[in-house]
Length: 480
Image (tube, rainbow, N blue to C red; front, side):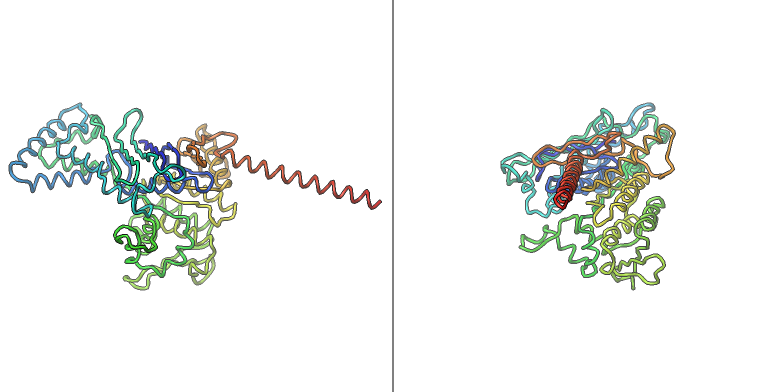
């Protein structure tokens, strides 16, 4: 399944078209829109509870159950007829069960959820900390430009559904969407087709089952760039303050507010509890991060069940842990990642990390690239924004390792790898459309300006060295 996102005149972005991959990389100069697009993707994920083939399946099934049980008898009879038609199609051997085969109550509810203007407007305002989503119209040129956002979910040549947003000024957003009536919900050869659906409630059961198997709700998490400062100050924050810290619900009071991503990040930390059934593969990535980079453990101390957790860093061989405010900036930056992997993120989730290389030595930046590859191998979808050439170079090496594996070869240097098709890198420019950075076997995924800067630095260095040598030569001649 592919998710294709297009934006036009969105914040500082003139135009961008991207496909979300298991590892999506945004690179480019500052103030070119990397964070804007990452925040939009987070808002879309929050709005749909994950981008999947049919993200609202569970909500639709619950609505149908309510409609059938609690509507007036005349309405209930109509629903019952529609359900019986759906049951007949479900029990037809060798026939795909499609979206158009659903009872009208379910298909119309799906369309209503897809185009819910109020909910998505709320998410945009919350995530970007704005009073009006129309303020996202590209601010580097005329305010009269039309802002467009579109999301298309498809597989191969078939589009499952699409979602479009547009606005031309200080008015409400216009939202449209379309669900493909030929979208296959249950394949003719699916083992579930061997089950005969007899009762009207079986349609609801079908949806609940499929929700768990194919349309499982996925979560998204955003680790903002200011992680070290947040970790050092979070002990003074309380859940109530975080809940009230977004602009929505403050009745336009002129107070300082958090963006939705920062507020969600803080809330996860304040209410931190390790997932009871966390993925062993994802937890192992956290352990490797502690071993390879932190050389110590991130500990969670909760004096009482009612108390907020305290996060400590205990270096290897140390008897006591250190508060985050007494730890290095690297520890404060990486501690949230360790905590999220150990107890929050699960397989299939989206993890957005702004500048994962912050406060890290170049060697540590290359190890972070290996962490990203391990997360992809564990089934986590990752999106990063970065300025690090070391990180990009190592991602290129990991793709090369993946290419060797395709040919039945591997190196002894590392067991971590990425497949070329798993990585999508996009280059953000000032006042220009965002462009994709395809992988090159020689250059990797480094943008041209990185290479230009490296060349300029080398030429500058060589020129200065030559001048120094020339000056020394003149001094030697004059002294003779």
